[in-house]
Image (cartoon, rainbow, N blue to C red):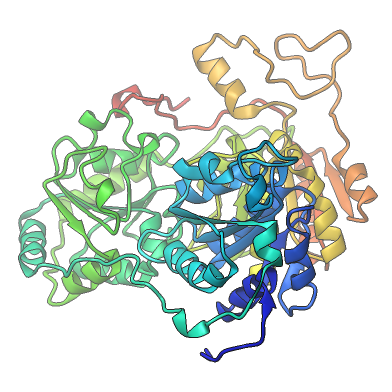
Length: 573
């Protein structure tokens, strides 16, 4: 990085130069009156600008880019509605610890607070859902602020940072002093204490039924290999959260797959009966623990996380460590004590045989579980899967076999419908060599369906599989289980005179026709026999491709632990 004085530049030009200096190669950006200066500066840069069809699509795309690579995703919008349209994407990045920088235009600083046209206090609006935010009032401050924004977004526990820049600051002429720029140590981790490592080793040596419970922190810190080395060295079974899927290969004998509300029965049973729970890069969220007081009730618990605020927040633990999970795992792997734990693994194997992930086959239709199993087989379990949110999201997690980190990109904490298509778009731009598949539901897909236009114009070859059941499926499942099947506006199909009970009417809309309007080929699948050929056709296509698979609504996502309950309330059929 050169540290030289330059000629006077506009604030907007300084912003773009900062992005270039931070290695940004792609930005998802939508223009507007208070961001026009930034776009004019971008037009003279080599950074690839992808124009989403909605700012929310751009925000999710930046998150998908970051999730797929670990690099910082960048998104830009104008003031007012442009900025507020980013909010769901910012909240999604915050909940799932995704490194992102959001740049927003703002009304001139003299107009702030006067209810000017398209003025919104985006700093105030987003304060609860960012790591930090900056309102820039002097162009001379831009290099240092942008430096801090990127450092904050990517350091420690990653997350979103907002930089709000009034239009007059974008227009302000300034000679930037790059010598002032220095990466700030925004997050420092205390040194690992030898006595803590010794205590964990002692716990491991006396444990009869240990279990690893790992999450997205393992993936964020690049600690997947360290996790595998540790688990195999000490012979400890591993379960992941939804966000941790792929951190440990699911075909490994030590894998318990994932746990929680819709996780495997054997993972949940192992955690409930273990005597030592090693929690790395997790936050003990409610979808995993149910009633926290009844979670892992027989276990000593070790919690390692880079974020001090997570320790003892949702579950009291016996040992909490503020540390990089990978570093702790590597330290523990030195001089391991390998134990066979024959009784414990016999118990786990028994649970695996008794409670496999399964479903009742119905040969009359293309069931969603069958579609995903077939897709997993045809892609060799190598594709990057980006679901929306709902039943299809859970089936994508259950029935596709993952072996690598950053392979399942999903809105875990926020659970934002409309995430799938734009996030897949961002992931494919970030990883053009990989097969990226958006598995979506008809409800979730329609929330950002306009991003088909971005795929077509930018030639982003995302593959789309819509598991179309004509319902808001997960809410309908809860209606079936907890509200006696009474439908409260969860039917998406079109019925004459209104849909009643389980009447779905004709399939609506025609997704293949919509896709063709954007110049994207597609195919409708109505039978089980068509599934494999249709998936092969999709995978062989060069550009984006859409499959509308009419699955019917007869299936529920099982197993299921009702919210706030424990394993004793498990629903299996």
